[in-house]
Length: 325
Image (tube, rainbow, N blue to C red):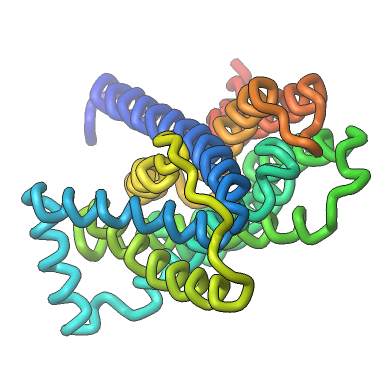
């Protein structure tokens, strides 16, 4: 039996590791909000959200292909991926995470320029939180079955309460219902995507390769959709020249890579809750600096972020009962 000091040291180390993972989840949310603003702005400038999404994903794919060729881990991971597909140890469904990513990026390009990042988060968080609860309960993520404890349920409820706070403003007057439904579906898809990419990462032993697979699938789907859409409605009205509008793909590479690493430690739900903090906090800042026509007021969005952060604290911090002497 290990000495008490050794067990205590391991416990402190484990808590620190989980804390770093939760901080990574918050960063993922912040990057998601930043990507939403970039892709939404690109969609508005191009006048076509689907074409903007295809541009964003394609740029991310180019970055990942270059990294996979240069980094030894990327080459080894790709080799394991090919071997896994041939031996069927990597099932086809593990290659489909990019579909959810493609839908998310497309929904950003179609809605964010109108409703703002914070209001986009309303639907996205609701879908992601609910999806995370269900997926953790059935053991879909790489961490296996993660119990849906009272703390996790309360944390999820508080995260959704933050969403409800966003709805309390007057911004929804002229917003079409589909602009909230689409982000909710995207949020549920991202919860599934995070679990899928995490499991693929375990199989190929490379977050870089898991992210590459995600971008290959998403790019193929979006390019096909963009070609069909252009054939129906015509070419975009303009090609913007501002370089920052084309950084959405690079930002996506970073946060999907982080998701594949972090989800193994946090589980799908806690990853989703942590990302809610970064997502809401960053969206408040972005909407305050660059307000959209239907964005909620800064005080309303700030209050929503505080409530959601409380949810993450409840879900993540292992509160201990005091022993009675």
